[in-house]
Image (tube, rainbow, N blue to C red; front, side):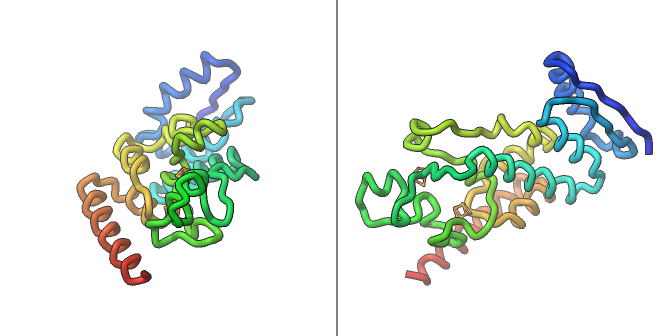
Length: 196
Ligand code: SF4
Ligand code: SF4
């Protein structure tokens, strides 16, 4: 393995690093271990991910780290204003539904989500947006390591469990992903219908 040292001490160096990330994440850096000297906290997990050379392990790390960053941003905040299992919108509408946006998902529970879905974690409606500072896909710099195709998948992989999303990213085929999403939706529909 070859070691590559990177120093990031100002915004110019940071911007340069993000431009070079396009190359650093490629296979020709497979034999390179990155070392960084920086005070920018967002860089450390990116370097950790770049130093994971196994593709599945790298995707898993990026996924879990991005989820942790979202959880950290919303720590101890009830952003959807849940009261008696009803979110802001459901309290307003008074239509008897519960569990907010998760009500159509088989991974819902009265204690929240039973899995870890990054796409869902990033979703917010206008009721939430007018009440709190939200975190967006672009704020999660670590996701820059993923391919464009993986980022498209990740932006739309709602109602799926963590392991399935990671598999979708690993397979990295938009066609297979579309087929899997349709199968999952049919499966969810029948599971919910049976539960009623
Ligand atoms: S995002 Fe909006 S609609 Fe969805 S659960 Fe939160 S408050 Fe309710
Ligand atoms: S996977 Fe998404 S929709 Fe389903 S329970 Fe979890 S957060 Fe809700």
